[in-house]
Length: 317
Ligand code: MTE
Image (cartoon, rainbow, N blue to C red; front, side, top):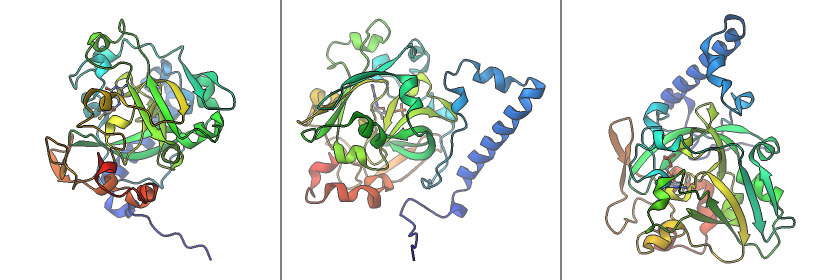
């Protein structure tokens, strides 16, 4: 007989009241949208400029539960890291200048057939769903976000990598006219991140194309970004234009800038401090409290196996 064992992040529904509140809001929105067809409510107008409006609300995958409230959208969209638009957390207005259509993603390197895919064609080819994920920045703040997107593993399958491919190297757009932060020559633009192929194949590795029940706002990394919730947030690269399959470990943006402080693996661990601060606790943005940091940000059961034989501080740095 197949017995489904509850995993560590699947806390009982009864303890996730704030999350349920979020879904109450979803059903209200859904209801309003249906009513809107007859009553011409503003919900229809709200969706009008969303190129992916037809995808929402996406099927909710309830395997991925939270132990905390979803961060309100208004709080999240006023507190971002997106250095292309400056080093302030309030880059929402500046990021609006990013044009996200047309947009294509280049898939190249050690793959059967390198290609450029228009973002909407890519999305059409992928199984789209919504997941609730924790998000932990190396700066010791945290949020919880309802992402919409698809498993990164599906993109890897589509790319059909050759056996020599060991890593994915992901790259953000470069256009200093749109993104004034890229005029700051001391940063090694474009933003680059890397993940090992087995990390990319893990079921938690997710490509987000939406958040809060609609297309990604630019401040979240539209039109497509990574979400790897067991790693510090800097691994979750935004506004991706290129994914290359490579044999050597890529050197990421922060590693290039300050290799003594930001490593390749960047797995969350309360017991391994950043050289300049402790990682023992995290501030829940919008909730006004600090809570203990969890190993692998609470996803150890799912991902610890990826690092078997690599134990040591390196994988948390
Ligand atoms: N991706 C790009 N292209 N540029 C960035 O500055 N910042 C990273 C990551 N991805 C960043 C990026 C960091 S440090 C974090 S914590 C998260 O994005 C922040 O995501 P959020 O703004 O959606 O919270």
